[in-house]
Image 1 (tube, one colour):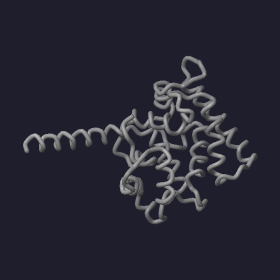
Image 2 (cartoon, one colour; image 1 turned 90 degrees about the vertical axis):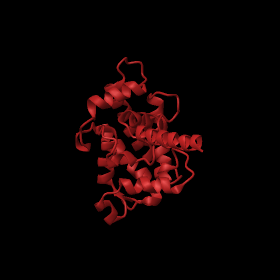
Image 3 (tube, one colour; image 1 turned 30 degrees about the vertical axis):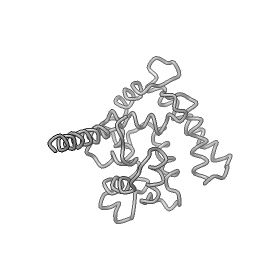
Image 4 (cartoon, helix red, strand yellow; image 1 turned 45 degrees about the vertical axis):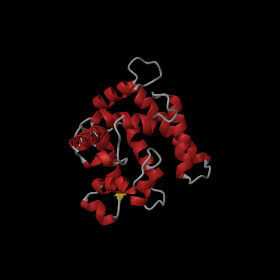
Length: 212
């Protein structure tokens, strides 16, 4: 009985510790690289990732239809974003940006800054990301759209985990309008990668995180 209780206590401690680690600044940077930008899953960022992102975002925005004009717009956005990231973080100029390089670039460029002070390409990308999540195009990301976005990146067995993250993300103003609008999303995204505080609401923008 004593051993059983000790095991349960250790398990609770490990779970709590793991949960806290999931929202550290380092882990959030790793999350952005792995799940937001490294589309070909090779462990680093390069031009190919952003070309793939252009196609993916076009298909999502157009609900499965193909729009060549939208693709050209997205391709220009992603090309500018890659050039910005490469300029900020490809320190050895090898055409690849590692997690460590990306972290250094973010710390130098974004940490402690608001959305308005972010590099232009980052701001454009964030606005385009909102379009892919706002499935019904009403200008608000509700809990249904939040769920759809979250489950594309991780595996869950309990919907309550996702809904709990959404509720933690919401401010009183968000609750009044039923979700996250573009301006709020921009601020939250900026805070996700610029605020080292692991207790800020923005850490839940992409749902429950796991240590990487």
